Figure 1 (cartoon, helix red, strand yellow):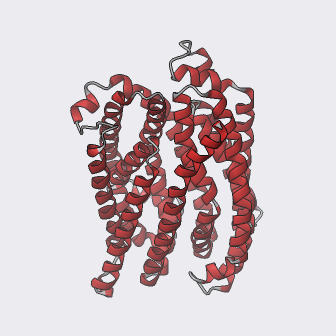
Figure 2: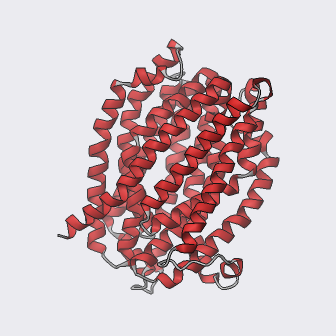
Figure 3: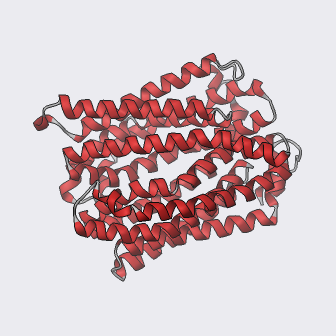
Length: 457
């Protein structure tokens, strides 16, 4: 009976995320088609420039990761009176951090472009794109924090409807730019600003729902987020810093690897950007199940249901890989037709098919790694994934350079580096889980174990 209830709860959390990913992925592809019509160089620029943006967004993830873990456990323990303070603290922290990062990031654009070896012919476009996306990155950060809040409560439908609305608005604004702005006057900055406007509307929608939610009883207050929330801020940072820096370390390594792709030339960059549209769907099972599992496992921990957490983790891995394999096979079968939507370049399509084949193995490895990392973080064991990501990222960079650049295997060698990274993460976190240290950490965070020694070890 417990298993059936758990499966039913997972299903109700997963299906809105599936719809969200499919619809938003489709909308993102339409967006890319519109931008590609404007300039194929612009599409290649976004493919590489977004790596820098993701690096910055992961700095903000220090807050969103921390608040998602804290809130899920609070919700699981039905301590709803703490929710308003936690949300206020998270919003204030991200706003302050956002202003600092936006100022520093914009002034560092030339250095960042050199870091990813952006080709000279794309530098002007890259500066236009990054000026807007980095300058207003705090908007994306606040949107991500509010998304984490709603998912921690299990409000997946509300998140899905809001994020789909944001992406539809972004598509409409992008189309307006392509139609209403004279072709000779268009630039990538105009297309980038459409996303900022759409995200701002998304924030307003989320805040409206928060203020009306009777369970959360939220009141927007800067004072509440600063003066009366010292312990909450410390706890968010304690859980968020390792979890957030895990993403930062990973993305630093990926930024270096994107630099290797840049060394291979514009063709490799374009192939990577196009293949990413297909792998987006290949990893859909991993993304949806781990997104729901983070909230679900956190709530189970908050309720003190340790045995249910063990069962849920095992089932999530089987379910993820069981869906991922047939999904990858189907996408491989239609791979050439999908790639032809974006380009007719025979060399790019041929290379893209090779990379898609490697991506099948990559997504199986991702299914294990993502589930184990998500589960460990949800129970409060955030330090171990952080340490492993350092070693895995070093391995990724080394193999990508050695195979892709030194041995001249190109993009295929770089993809093997990605696979090695995921295999190491998945195997190490699985061993950590089997040893059971996470149980003491979980009990410590839900207040049933006062001794923090086991947590630090």
